[in-house]
Image (tube, rainbow, N blue to C red; front, side, top):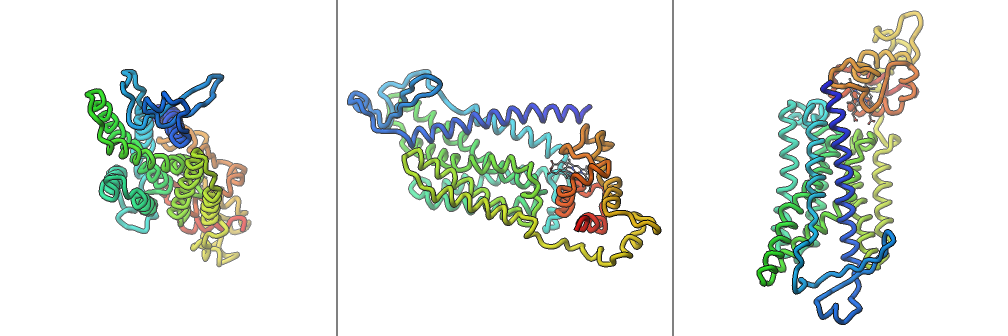
Length: 419
Ligand code: HEC
């Protein structure tokens, strides 16, 4: 029952999370488009009023006339529309999902038993939770300090962008080395997403509040508040595509079960940012096809790195070297008289190492339904899933946390099945 409740909360939170994120990112993309698409106001009286740019638009059968003021209108209306709940809801629902999906089961989902770093491979569950939280917090602290130190007056934003890019490569590298594949992708996305929400919470909204307060008091608002809000909101724009990509990458094990997962992740992050750049420029009337081309090249490079064709041969291949005698040596899987077919051997391994979880009705208490919808009970089911079984086993991702203690020989049997 409790795992059923977790499933249901997962379902509802994910729904909320995706809807809030669509609303937030949609609005943010809309305002970047609006800002970049503004034209000089046509009417003299608008210019007199301090209007700096305007946009006419048609949408949903109506005509809209947006105007942006250079600093502020003479009189600010009381019913100003603010945007922040979408950002906060996205972060809060995402963090809640992270708690019920990852932090509730950290030794399965966070710990990377294959980490080249011994301390990381040996983290206990609660330690992994603490490290994950520090990772998110640390990401924000480093990013925020970088913004404050590298470009405090928004005069060195180019240098700052380079700094943020370098930081993301480092985050990708560290997360893949510390956390299990899926969690690493998710946490890298979450570092950016946390920076985005924290930008809204700690800088953009407070800055806007100070500006509004000053205007209402008849004072001139501090222009740095406006510029800083813009700086952070520009960062948010370039984070959006990479974040969404990393959040959905969870479904694609080729990306995160690869030895070069951090390179794949980095290439995809940069691809997202340069593709976004194309649209940012497009809204200001510039068409620079070099950006989408660069994005596509980066994506192709990521796919090339992830390609099974480029993966090094499985190191455990020698188990097959014995040829005919291999099955007799391992003894347990095949009878002496009739050597079992490779499929039958693999099926037998699934029976001992996988069906506790991957059954229509899993015996494992943590699951009320087969995880990822993968059922491995019959030979036909096993055969149908060959490619994904080989991939998740070769990468060490399955059996999850090697809970069922699969042996290297068994991994070798699966790796060479069908070759
Ligand atoms: C302790 C429970 C457990 C065991 C044992 C286990 N799995 Fe999984 N498996 C999971 C969970 C949970 C997921 C879903 C995780 C995810 O979405 O990445 C999963 C996902 C998968 C997927 C889908 C991966 C994807 O990205 O779509 C495959 C394929 C798979 N397992 C194969 C296996 C094989 C083969 C074995 C045995 C060698 C095995 N699993 C053993 C829990 C388990």
